[in-house]
Length: 68
Image 1 (cartoon, rainbow, N blue to C red):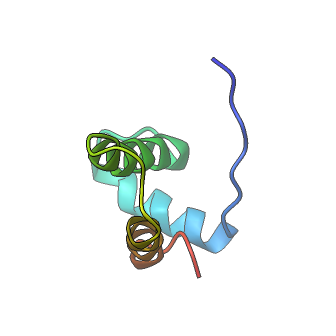
Image 2 (cartoon, one colour):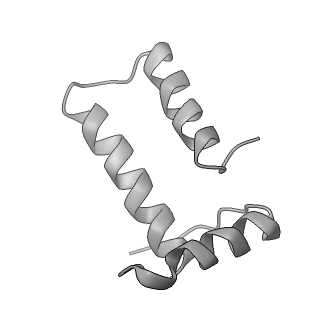
């Protein structure tokens, strides 16, 4: 499997790491993969994402602190 790098602010990464202390996630990357898989899987079931759905995904990521 090939990988790519996604950049987030260090302060956010540190906040996420603090949140992960009592979870089964092994790190920030593990949580991000889980979140993105969950988000995209729910939309893939219905087919291609509409612009409104993309905006909803962006809003959810913003609420989680991944987007400013």
